[in-house]
Image (cartoon, rainbow, N blue to C red; front, top):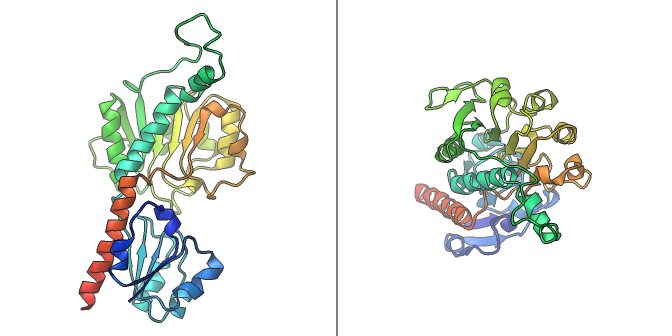
Length: 312
């Protein structure tokens, strides 16, 4: 059984791939460009991909292909309709990164709320050393307790963010992007109302036709002054050009772990906002704690083992 892993670099070099090797003849590629995919999977029985796109044409060219394992939860890089039509099973791994994403959500929120970048720079630059005070209160910050935390997308991750935010003393509002998830322990607000009343807004919804460009110039203007906006979902949910303009126009704070184009392009306007202390961008790492990546690998192995059992 030929198993081809197309982008092992996304799993990290610290993971032990032995469990995969025990399931068949494993061929790994650190990364795979679109021009390389056809050749690399043509004799594969099982393909493992994180972000490498698998089209109908590629599947049709791979006569031995029986299973595509997506090393992620999102499945938008595989033509699912074509896979079903061709009798190719597609399996993802869900739930492996919840703790990691929730933790990173609060890492961003707390860094922005506490003005960590500003105060670190005050110390590193020598400003605090030259002052005559034991403290520095030049850039006031506030507490999460008593604030309204708005959650866009109250799925598994959104609910866990809500639970932790409540532990900090926040009051939860949420918006269901599907319009179907409205029976919860929290108050549902429509998107415009949520943006206008919340002190912190975090995004945890899927990217689809409904959420594409959901947060644009008109909605960014609804945010309260000094509000914090966090995107831990997909980059294209927030219009980046509009966001850069809003950051330059007034005082809001933004934490992003995802972007419409990854890695970030050097001419992205977000790299050129005036006040760097009000924007944190991390390189799509919220999902990738060591523990989460181990769970992901375990999920892939389990999916392959289940497939083998079904075929024997």
